[in-house]
Image (cartoon, rainbow, N blue to C red):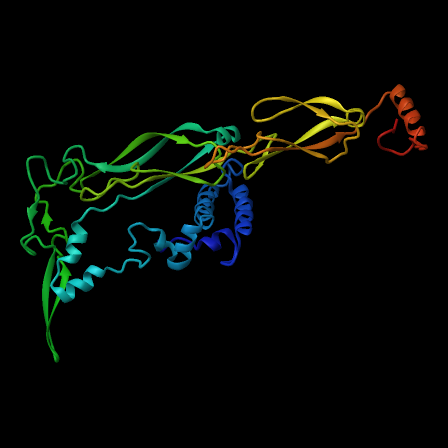
Length: 363
């Protein structure tokens, strides 16, 4: 945790930044460091992960509140509620003769979380997809089943601390004698030692293995959001639960569509004649092309809304809309006949374009 940069510093926003400012800063940085847009920059992927992690916390009110109060330790499930590495057990042990800290040290402990990221297409983000993710994690050793001891042998009770994991040290001072309780140096607080280590894991009880996990990425997920797969992280200690697999999603840009929340935007090209007279045109959507009637007199920049053609909501059955913006394609080259007809058309409006200036009507 000590090496992590401040999340507000990562996104380049102040601690008083509102939700829109945080989102705007994230989008700018995510685009800047997106792995697919920075293939030749070695640090881009790591920076993208850091930016996505910061946004995942500051965009979540619950996590943001914990982070603002306790910092990075406030987000650590093993961090003692934001009090860092301060061990209450050592304090209790010094007053009451031990036992509390040892029970915590030898008790079940959750395994570490594993963080990965997955690249998916715009359509896959919209409608969901199954994706196989390769991860490396530590699991119980197959040879010793996690004990760390050579098969056929067992851990031995530590003779130095008699299995308590702690030793009492008496100190004589001017104010009298005091007894301090410290972690046993021989067994490192475990209460037992391994006399013959497992040849496979060298006594650690763990093996690093590669696994392929099939993940259901839900419909509606957005770039930079994360999903958590419970129990697919590192193995727990002393029968504790496994950690989680946390996957940050990177959505690839689309050549036609852009997204804002659950709405999809695209620009639709039409001709001058279609804009003037109206027409039935084909409009691309995430579900395929549809027919849409353009009204006569449609102006450049006009927008129309296609209900229910946007992104599905992650939490409800609602689906956003598609916003289509019209732009009129003005021809750059015309035939002589087309020019004459256009001059006549202009004259009906009392216009008399010369057609001599370099540009649309240049010969």
